[in-house]
Amino acid sequence: MSNIITAIVAGVGQITLDRPAALNALTLDMVRDISTALLKWKNDQSVEAVAIRGSNQEGPFGAFCAGGDIRFFHRAGIAEDADLEAFFTEEYRLNHLIFNYPKPYLAFMDGIVMGGGMGISQGASLRLVTERTKIAMPETNIGLFPDVGGGYFLPKCPGYSGEYLGLSGKVLSGAEALAANLADRAVSSDNLNDLWDSLTNNEMMTVEQRISRLHSVIDNLQLAEDDRWLTTDIDRVFNQASPADILKKLKQIDTPWAQETSDLLNKRSPLMLHVSLRQIQLGRHMSLADELRLERSLVRHCFYAYHLARTGAATDTVEGIRALVIDKDNSPAWNPARIEDVSSTMVDPFFVSPWSAEEHPLADLD
Image (cartoon, rainbow, N blue to C red; front, side, top):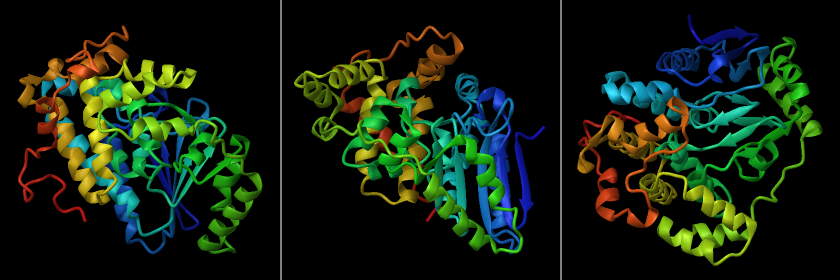
C-alpha cells in the first residue's frame, strides 16, 4: 500500500503524506512516489500548481513529516543494505527537484516538520506554518548532519542562526520559523482545510487567480512572527571556526540561553558537530546542486567511515539512532566523547568525495 495519496483537482496536483503512525517519516517508496508524481506533473499542462500536506490519525493535517525513516537507516546501516544508498541519492534528487520546480509548489507545514520534512518543504514557493508547527533540523542528535539541503537553506537564516539551528537542533514554533526565514506565512490550523480547498473549489477562476486569492486571505489570517529567540548572542557565539570555540564563547556569557545551548551541544555527537559546522559554513557559498553533492558524500562517510575504520554499529550515526529510537536509553556512546577531542584528521576526510566528479551519484544536478 502506498503511503502517498495523489490527485489532480481543478488544475492542482495534490500530494498527501499518509503514514500517520510514523508521523509521515519518509520511506524510499514514498520518496519515489513523490518524485514520480512531480516529474509527471512537471510537463503535464493540466497541472498548473502542486500542494503538499501531511496527515495524522484523525485525517488531513496535524502532522507534516518527521523526517526520514531512521529505523530503516539503523537496520540498513548495520546490514549495509544498498537501499540506504538509493534512499539518500533519490531523496536529495527530490529536494533539488522541489527547489527548482517550474510550477507553484505550496507546502502546508502543519505539525512536526523536521529533517526530511524540511527537504520537501523548504523549496516551496509558499511555506505555510501554523501554531502547531514544530520545525527543526535535529540531525546532530542522531550522529548525522543537517542534510536534505540544510547546508543551503540554513545559511539563509538571519545572521548565524543557521549554524545555531543546525548544531543545536533547536525546535522552532511556526511564528519563530517566520522570523528564521524558514516559512512565509503563519495561519491558524483551524483554517487549513478551507485554505487547501480554496485552491480547487472555484473552477471559474484560473489556478493563478486562486493562488492569488489564497495569498490575500492568508495575509488577513497571518499570526505575528516571533523573533524573541533571535538573540544577539547567537551571532557572537556561532560565528566561530569550531565547535570548541563556540563552547568557549558560551562560557563567557552568563545567561540561561548560553547554559541551555551549551548543555544541548554537549549532548550532540562531537564528531558530527564539527562536520555540520563546516558543512554550513561551506554551504554559505555553494549552489544548491553543489551543496547536495557535498551532502551525498558526507552521508556516505557517516555510514561508511572507512578513514576511522568504522562501519555499521560502530558509526556515530547508527549509534545515535540506537540510543534515540531503538533502545531509547538516550545515552549514545559518541566516539570521540568530547568536542575538544575531535581532530582535523577525523573531520577532513568527510569532505573528500568517495567518487570522481563524473561518477558522483548526483553528477548531473545543475
